[in-house]
Every structure is written in C-alpha cells, then in structure tokens.
Image 1 (cartoon, rainbow, N blue to C red):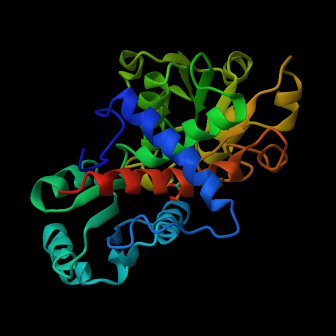
Image 2: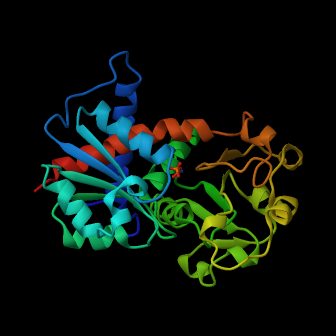
Image 3: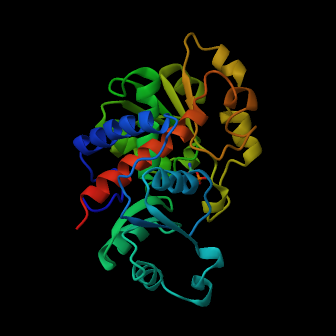
Length: 303
Ligand code: CP
C-alpha cells in the first residue's frame, strides 16, 4: 500500500508486520546510537492543520531516527490563512522534492481526499472524528508489550466514543488482532450504531472495569462538540471518572491506558494517571518505534 489512511481497510497481516517492524525499531532506538540510515534519501513533510504534541513530535523524531529530511508545516501560521487550498498547499510542498506527507486535519476524510489528488505517500496522523491509525497501532503494540499478546484480551474503551478517532481506529485494530472490545460511556457520547461494529456496549463504568484486562480511557473532546452535550465535565467526572478507590474495589489488576492529552480530575484522577497501573508514557515512547515502522514500510513501497 502507498498510504496509511486508516486501520479499517488494512489487513491483519499488515498490522502484524507493522508491530513486528516496530519491535525491531524499539530495540534500535534504545541503543546508544539511536539512528539508522534507512530513509536517508527521503524527505517527509509533517502537515498539521490541527494542534498536536505527541503525534507531531513523535513523527518528527521517528523521521529523524530514520535519517529522513524533515519539514514541518502548521496551518495556523501559513498561507492557508490567505485562502490557499489543501491540495495547492501540499502540491507546493511536494514541488520542493518532498516524498511523503504526514497529515493531521480536523475534517474526516481529508487524507483520503489528498491521497487521490496529489502524488505522494500519505500518512493519516488523525482526521477529525474519523481515524487515528498510528495511535491504534501504538496502543496495540503497548498492550502486546505489557500483556504478551492482544489476542484474547478484553479491552474497554471508556469515554467520549462519539467524537473519538482513537476509539474507532482502536476498535478496528484490536478486533483484527483478536481482542474482545467493549465501549463504555454516557449514552449521549456513544454513536447510535456502535454495536454494529461488533463491540459490547456498557453504560456502567464500574462494570466495564470489572470486565476488562485493559481500560483505554479517552478525553471528553469539547472542541468537537457542535451542540452542548450532556454530561458536563463535572457530571462526567462524577459518574465516569476513574479513581484509585474504584481500582482497589476490583478483584484483579487492570492496565490503564490514555492517548493523551489527559484532563486530570475529569476522566482519570491524578493518582490513577501516575500509578503503577498506567502505561501512558510507555504508549508515548512506543509511538516513535511504531511510526518509524510505518514510514519505513511505506517508503519501501514507494513508486
Ligand atoms: N494522542 C494524540 O494524538 O496526542 P496529540 O493530539 O498531542 O498528538
């Protein structure tokens, strides 16, 4: 494949190949010399139309560890502000001999549109409420690293499922790898037809925690809410916020994940986010190796 636009349309073999390649790169970047020459002749543009900390820095580090040349574009201080279109913007960047484009955009489908209208490998770094494929890959990588495998594990995705590209990409990725998936949240933040994706649906967060091996906890995405949704942050935290006492009431250990950024005291209390149960910073660390794998494999498929 020339692009990574989402997890939905890639095969289980593709996912396994990415995870295995990422495991090899994780070994590489833990050595004193972290860099390999694999993408020495490749130039990559990170094109961000939406804010990011982890994804953007992680892609940039992955590119540098692979010895690619890197340019970074943020729409907020660019000629997009003067009315330049997405395709014109990217074609101008590509005319400077850029080979690959990593793009984050607030419109679902923007990377798919781009892939049909420009000539470059496109990697989706998050498109609106649609998909965030490299997040799902790094989440599965982190589960495999922590628990030995993804197959057979019970993963509850808890929070604002309705607005979450992380939830959708995780559902596709986890199911391809043989995990059981549950979504949990207030009914107002669950998509109407979510059960048709083959996931369990649970409204009670304590029952979800009791069921799962892994809780992937999501942020309430106020910036994507077109209308005022119930619940408010205060209500969400009261009914769905996960705190240490809730974990202590379980008769087993569970793994807590979060894609970041965390709203401390809303979906997770600080004593859970910073606890031995949480692998949140391991997820971030694994993001570099996973993105190295994606870029390396796509560059090999170039042309
Ligand atoms: N997880 C994630 O996508 O974080 P950023 O928005 O900071 O990139």
